[in-house]
Length: 293
Image 1: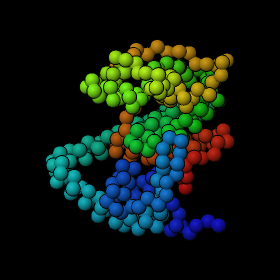
Image 2: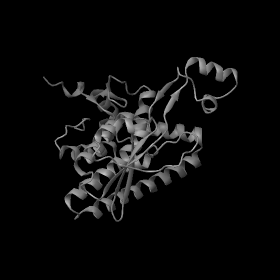
Image 3: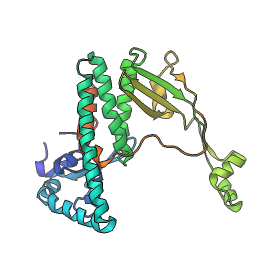
């Protein structure tokens, strides 16, 4: 028996669409007490929060007032002139991203169907990455599903898809004794690790920093994605192992990608991104991971 509409639970993509806001603003509404998390759904890569439809619907008429309050708050704390310039820039950026989206989708129209599917999936996967980087790590489950589907159906069959293996170092986590020795020597954990390599009690993650790199390219477009070795190593066998790609070793920690901009989130909404990627998966009879209805 289905629940009445007011008792239905909505995810961030659905709420963003209903209230005309970005996922970042959902966090703001939650922090200010307008929304209350009713349930959490556990994914492999993170947690997705759910909220009641009744609470979301009740907020719709209040959103103009809430947005005005946010604007006053931001003007006061960041400066009215500065925020005015920011809003003008954000609107210009939004228009630019809308135009670029239209140009891209128009440009792939007329290509062979399989190439359209790959490029369109890559476009939305690019934006999904940015949403995930903004704190919605559960979206990496959808990213993995799309990349795995590309491997199963296009790898070594379509020249537009190339996969490379980038070997990284092992991850070493210092044991309590080594951490204590590092502190006594006034060394950071990284400095101590470089100096000693740890001991037999320290845990080691084999090839922890290794990656698979996915390049999807056409004459006019190139998309590049990365996924951890541990996540994708079972997607390949000894007959179709990706070629190795040299990557210069650098000291420090580096992250791929960036968090989504507000203007980008307005031009390419989260619900659109999820819906389009799940339509791509549906071509291969893969059930949706996240509700968009």
